[in-house]
Length: 407
Image 1 (tube, rainbow, N blue to C red):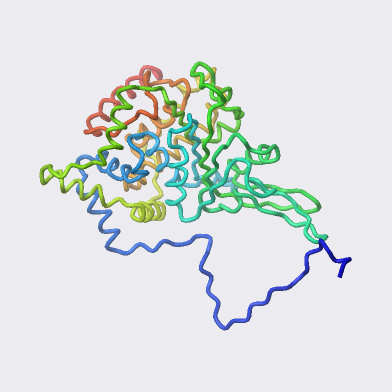
Image 2: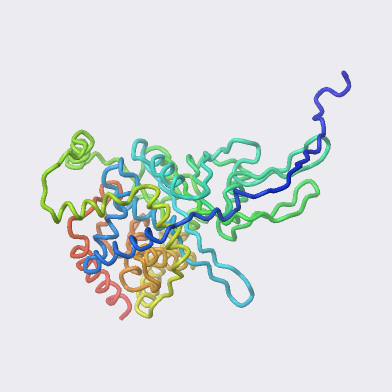
C-alpha cells in the first residue's frame, strides 16, 4: 500500500528449537590443551638463564613480516596482555586494560600492527576514527519506526576485547567528548532521547594516527597530533615512529626483505634455538596471551614498587612541558605495564626487571625522556643478540639515575 512506504515492517522473530547452545559467549574461551601448557613451561625452563632471550623469541613472532621494530612489538604485546584490574574498598575500579597509540609517518607499518593485534585478540573490532555507522566509536540514539533505540559503536561492540582505531585523529565531535570516559572509566553513560543508561567498554584501545604535517620533535605530542593532552594521557604507551631516513637502517631492512632469510647452515645449537623460535606462530601466541592472563595475577615486589615510585617522582619534577602525561595516570600505566611484563615472563611477581622494562616503554613514549638521554627512534629499534647482557647495562644506568634523583 502506498501510505506505508518508508516505514519498516515489524516482525517478531521466533526460534523454535529443542536444544540451543550459545557459541559466542563474551569470554570466548580458548581451549588450551595440557601439552601446550607443558610446552610453555619447557620453553621458560630452557631460557632460565637468559630470560630476555626467551622473551625476544616470543616477540619475534609478532608481525614477523615487519623487520625489527622491537620497541613496538614489545609495547603491542604488553598492551594485549594487560595489567590486573584493581578495586578499592569503595568499589572504584582502576582499569587493568592498557591502551596504546602509534603516531607515525605513512609506511611505518602502523596498520600491519593493528591487523596483527586484532588477530591475536579473541574479540576484536577494527575501525577508523570516523567509524562506519552513525554510532561512530561510542554510541548514538537512532529512531527506528517511531521508537528510539541506542546503536552501539565500535568501543561498545569490542567490550571484553580489543578495539583497533586507525586514523584516530579523524574522530567525530561526539566521540571526542565520550571517548575520555570510555577509555578511563570503561563505561559510556548515555542520556539521549529519554534513554538513560550505562554501557560497558572494557576494551583495550589500540589507536594509530599520522602526525599533523611534518613531525616537529621540539613540540609536545598534542601539537603534533591534534589530540588533546587529557586524551593522550589515557594511553599507557604512545610511540612515535618517524621515518628519519637512516641509510644504514634502510640497508638492513631492504636486505632483510629481499633475502627472505635464506640461511640453511648454522650450528646445532642455533637450530635448537630456531626451533624454539619458530614455535611462536599466531595460534600459539593467542594461546599464550590467553593462558598468562588467566593464570598470573602478578603482585609488585618491594623493589619494583620503589623503582616505579622513584621514576614517577622524577617525572613529576621534570614534567613541565609534558604536564598532561605526568599525572597519577602515568603511575597506573607503569604498574599495568610492569604487571603485563611479569605475565609475559611467566611469573606471578613483578620484580625489578619488569619495573625497568615498564619505565623503558614509557620513556620511549615520552617526547622528552627523563632518564635515557638517547632512547632512539622506536622505528629503528632492533632485536639485540644478547638482550640479557644489554639489559644489565641499561639497568645499572637507570638505577644510578634514579638514585641520584632520590637522594
